[in-house]
Image 1 (cartoon, rainbow, N blue to C red):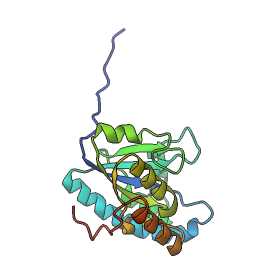
Image 2 (image 1 turned 90 degrees about the horizontal axis):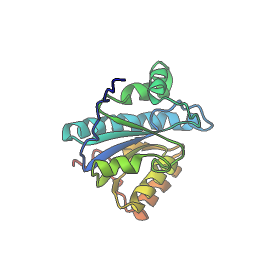
Image 3 (image 1 turned 180 degrees about the vertical axis):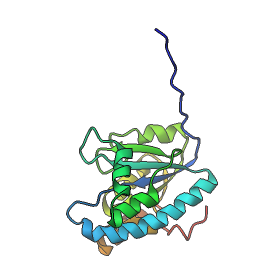
Image 4 (image 1 turned 45 degrees about the vertical axis):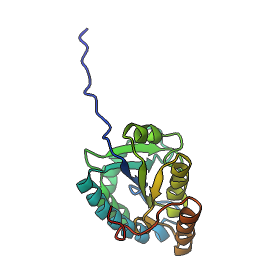
Length: 192
């Protein structure tokens, strides 16, 4: 029997990492109709931030729900959504992961909970996380809380997040700024 070695993919060294939380999303749950338009606005801002991160050599990590399907395949979901009309399809086309991006499935709200995210971030020697995505008052906020508890510096740019209502988003951003000590300035207000 001849043994062949699989090429070992290296986790990139990156002291900062852009986490894109649940942007790749069918938006087919109760309340999604209220989230769709703000999600598209947030995705457009996040796409611009991702381009800036690319120019600065900052790693991009997609952290996406598996929607309770343990046989899920993230890239199949991306392919399915890019063919759709509406906000879900537009977001998927705008933010489809590239070959250099890392992709992780998460089983619950926080991207850290029962996922390899912490291990990946430690391997890349990340110290600061840019947390963007859906929804500000759920998965983004809980990921920011877990990052805070693990000693990461967190930037959650307000324009790169969305929630079902303006009030829910405002409350989440206030909580992240005051309790979790996150920088919540818009992506256009921070250049580094």
